[in-house]
Image (cartoon, rainbow, N blue to C red; front, side, top):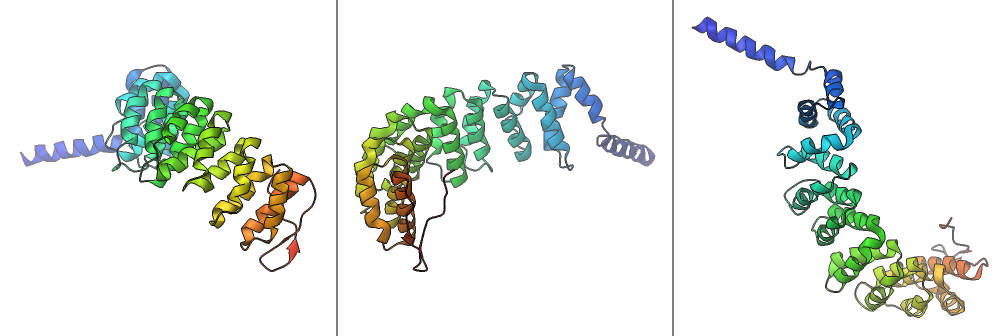
Length: 298
């Protein structure tokens, strides 16, 4: 009896040791030939800890394209963190809209690590169904999730403008700040009114930057008033924003702030004044020397 058990154990050990020797090239060839079981096996290998294996398999699955989607979708709620991240990233890259409900669920599950991959994937898929979960993610406690959700909404471009404006009607704190940043980067004139409204509130510094990106002259007076703000960050952002859209009134205001008590406000006032007038401007740097600001625009 003992001999039989020993033989069984040897058989099991031999079988286990044969897995690493799997002919990956052959498996990839079968998957490229459209064999569903081979594709499923490749998806399973995404959780491998062998150096470079999961990356190679991931690249192969992307190469397979739409034919890999069913196997990826079937494992999207895997308990293996690594496998789940690869799957979400692959579905995002392949723009599989059917994955949105599952990705939305993952994005809203705080215990999961690296949830920002889900936000990124929704942006890559580009289906409008992804906008609402991304707006919700702007209020996430995780800064990386908020950052990637903002970038994803920017990727939606014009399609995200009205949802972002609606979101800003009630959003507060980091959620509202992220929405303002997104609207600034999308640069749609429809955002002007809501950004002007926020230019009077606690998020005025963010609103100033966004207004500068819109380059709408109707924001000039608000930004000029921002140069006199008690908060130095707000003053700096107002000075920064006036460069791309300012006129003679902005030039006069910027000239006065070349002697602001805060160095970066002086520097940005000089830089924007150069943009508005087209003439070189000197400002007093942190060493008390009068110099031109270095160029950050190209």
